[in-house]
Length: 310
Image (cartoon, rainbow, N blue to C red; front, side, top):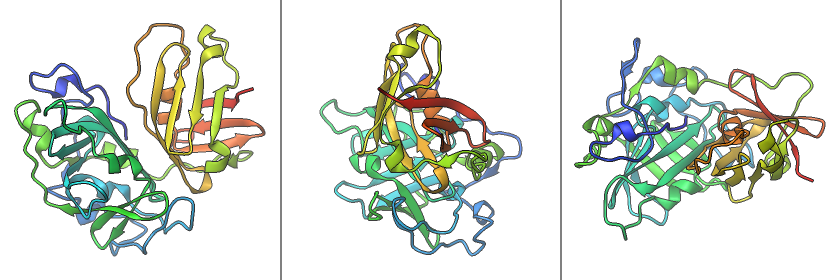
């Protein structure tokens, strides 16, 4: 899931990510936590064996739809707790209600137990000298369930936080009240978090090690292509350019070519650019066709092709 521009979500605030919350046909209320109907078909008991990091053994498939809800973050590593609201993109995406007020961002998760969060560096409200983000969220790369409790993990499988259901955040004067309500599990949300299509025949799964480094468009004749690049860093951050605008985000890789990435803030210089951030943030798998990196959506459609920078 990724958060769209959210100026329309803020009451009396001009900037920020998200969209106005909307109830879709066929939606079901999640209450303060996902209901049993949102649990994984592969695990009707509602629990999975303890997982490890994406770099090690991976637990049986799980259901990221169960993450949708308003949660009190407890046992937080190196930070004060707060309320973490994980919602579909059209209901605000990621919101963190901390001591400095709410901040917004994006999140993605998959059925392998991969998780990535990209909280905004800009708080909706709060003192300018107050930390606007929850730094520990940027270190999360995986999740597992202990019973009905989501546990967020770092890249070594260490617990960063546990999530307790039933949180009721206070929106404050600069946030629409609907963004403090429990999010709703919709048909569109289920589709967005459904298992990704397998890699096509002829592609070998890309691993974290093979993805690291600097990549450029494999075959793009647009003028901006010569300056466009992506650099996937070992700390889980990526940086790059579409040929005109600096871009950044976070990324995590898993088994069978699984790949999740977010796209953060970007400059807005107009040019005949290459939408590398969109290629990456829409991808759910990555495979290698010889030396060419092929990015594919959850539906198995190519989002882009890259090659190693010279």
